[in-house]
Image 1: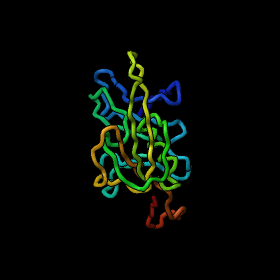
Image 2: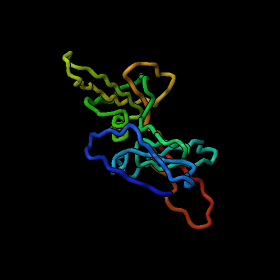
Image 3: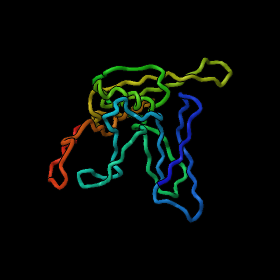
Image 4: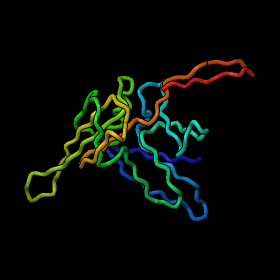
Length: 193
């Protein structure tokens, strides 16, 4: 497993896609592209942000530790990978924990929710709308707002809505027990989150 890291020159630079090219004859079976803060997606060092690798953990499928807030798996022959978060053109209803203006992207909104997981954030919705001053220039600016919700993301509460993106925080593991087990001892592992 090889890893390349590219750092954005500014904090509010929002990469929306990546083009990945491999040398002919050296294709891997998957390409993983992540985007996120260098420090990781959670502000709580004892919690882990994880995601299933296209499967079911209860069935023994692989669970991946995610220090980044978006991860896309694509076959190796796909060269363009979208770096987006949530379900576009969808708004989900729920109890608002807090909201923040001028959040640069849907993935930043998800990151704000992850930072507020301890405070109760379980899903989020992001609104973005652009306008201009009705002059002859091409200058536009965006209005944005990120809503943090205390409800678990439920697609049944979602509805189509232009300018909205909604999503959840994947899975957050907050602890496990027992912490120690003697060698050769049978035990039941309990994971909380």
